[in-house]
Image (tube, rainbow, N blue to C red):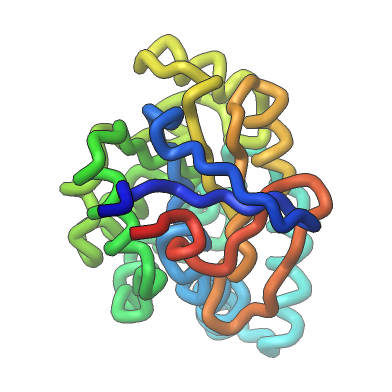
Amino acid sequence: MKKPGFTLICPGMEQKMRIFNEIKTVFLDMDGTILDKFYDDYFWEIYVPQKYAEKEGISFDEAQKILFSMYKAEEGTLNWTDIDFWSMKTGLNIFQLKKEVAHLINPHPDAEDFLRFVNSNGKKVYLLTNAHNRVMELKLKKTGFDKYFHGTFTSFDIGYPKEKPEFWEELRKKIFFEPEYSVFIDDTEEILHTAKNSGIKFPILRAISSSKAKEKRSKHFITIKNFKELWTI
């Protein structure tokens, strides 16, 4: 019987690298990687502007313009996903609004099978997310995915967003892992570049982060549309 294993495909190459036995640790992003990012996109681009427009007595288009400018100013910082910060900035109860549309929280269809697979093959599995802790807890409760992780870390636990090299420096103080035997899957290239520069041997891009988004490809990283591309049975 053929032994289960990862089959990682290099962009532009037919040759496959069978590395399953080499990998000890699997790091996974949450939004866009194991969860459908449609929830987050809808929330910040549609739902919050609707509520902000109602509160301020302005049009939806005006609300979007104001909020998108606010969002951009905080991109790449801890404020970007800090629901307390955005509650203060908008005058809205952001976490309450998150709960109001929690029915839109959904995993990617292939995510749970992959989580079961890596767990059953003895890998250490960690969730690494820029999400606020309360939002992460809401999503893990909704999906039931918390049972698959040996540990979960938000950028608020670490003190830096994943875009910063300090994220990986601080993570190494919290858990033991060997970067040369680690795989990290995320839907953001900037974050993957940071991981690679921090020594993570196998950074992988999730090409389709949202069920409503187009596929993206990378010239720099192994790219997958589906977790099933990462193993053979």
